[in-house]
Image 1 (tube, rainbow, N blue to C red):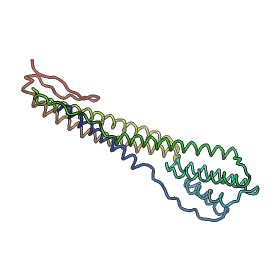
Image 2 (cartoon, rainbow, N blue to C red; image 1 turned 60 degrees about the vertical axis):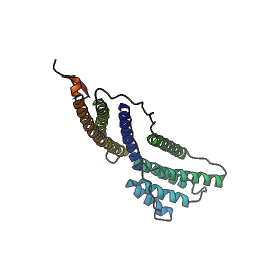
Image 3 (cartoon, one colour; image 1 turned 135 degrees about the vertical axis):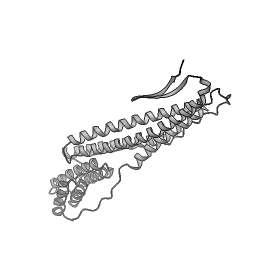
Image 4 (cartoon, one colour; image 1 turned 90 degrees about the vertical axis):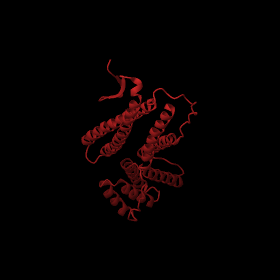
Amino acid sequence: MSSVMRTTSSRLFGGLVTGLIASALVLGPVQVVHAEPPGNTVDELFPYGQEKFDAEDYGEAAAAWAKAARLLPEDKKNAATRQTLINLAIDAYLRAYRAKDDRSFVDGAKTLLDDYEKSLQDAHGTVELTPEIADAKQKIDDALADIKAKEEEAARLAAEANKEPETEPEPEPEPEPSKPGNGLIIGGGVALGVGVIGIGIMAGGIAGVLSAQKSYDAATPGSTERDTFQKKAQTMTVLEVVGGVTAGVFVAAGVALLVVGLRKNKKAAGNAMIVPTFGRDYAGLGLTGRF
C-alpha cells in the first residue's frame, strides 16, 4: 500500500511540473505580422523610420529603413547611403527583438544583411563589409545562437515533462499490518513534503518579485532594463501563485490523512501518539504521550 501511495504522490507532483512547463511554452513569445511601411522613396521612408525610432517603435523603423536600402541600386553613388541605411535598420531590428522577444525581428535583420551581401557580390564580384556592418553581422549571429539555445532548452524540458514515469512492479501481497493507519500516515507525510516544496516555491516567487520590483524602480524609465525586470516580476508572480496553491492543497490533504491514520493507530499505540508538528521553517511528525 505504501508503495502505491508513493507512486500516486509522485505522479501528482510530476503532473504539476508538466503543467507549469506547458503553460510557459503556451505563453511564450508571440510572432507578429509586420505591415509594409508607407512610402516608395528614400526621402519618404527615411524620416518615417526616424519618427518611429524616436517613438521606440523599433520594428516599424527597421522595416522602413530596410525598404529604403533595397530601393537603392548598389553602385558607387549609393554605396555610403546604403551602408548607413543597413546599419540603422539592423540596429533597429535588434532593439525590437530585445524589447519584444520576437525572433522574427532577428530573421528580418539576417535577411536584410544576406540581401545586402548578395548585392555587393553581384555588383563588385566581392563582398567587403565595413567594420560597422561586420559588427552588426556578429550581433545577429549571437542573437540567433541565443535563440537556438533557448529553443533547444525548451524542447528538452518539454520532452522531460512528457516522459512517461517508470512503472513500478506490482508489489507482493503483504500481510495485514498491525497498524491499519500506517499507509495513511505515510501518504500524509508525502503530501506534507510536497506542500513544503510549494511553500519554498512561493517564498522564492515572493523574493523574486521584490527583487525585480527593486531593480525596476532603480532602472531608467523607458529603458530595456525596465522591460526585462517587468517580465521577471511577472514570472516570479506565477511561481508565487503556483507555490501558494500547491502548498495549500497538499498541506491540507497531508494533515487530513495524518489525522485519520493516527486515529486508526491510537489503540495500538496505547498512551503514546504520533502527531504532526509544524513550525515556521519545518513540518514533520512528533511523539507525545503520558508516562
